[in-house]
Image (cartoon, rainbow, N blue to C red; front, side, top):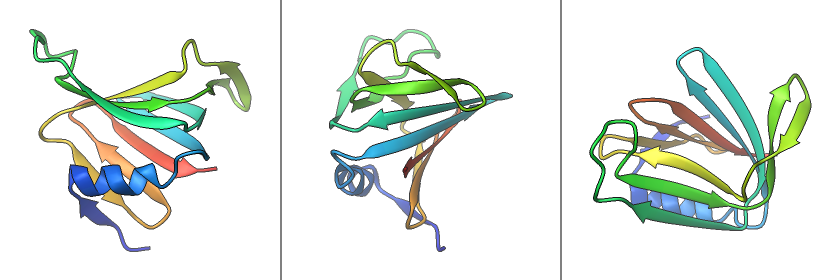
Length: 115
């Protein structure tokens, strides 16, 4: 499948089409791999203009809905809240290959796909 880059606006519009469906979010950060299943209810963004360190990003993609996170192979625990946050930067890249979104930040790579 052909992969192409999206603007944040195009990414937002396409991701909103998955509203009401279950998505799998895979986060790869350094040597850590996390998998989360989420019933995607709403998508929103937040901005924190008061960031003073590099750990907290200025923009956040908020995926709202009930979900569960994989703790061991095929064993899941409920998410602590009905919110999955993806920190975004001005340098973040947004890609879509026809079946999944890939969000690349300076800290991690997130894959979002329908289950």
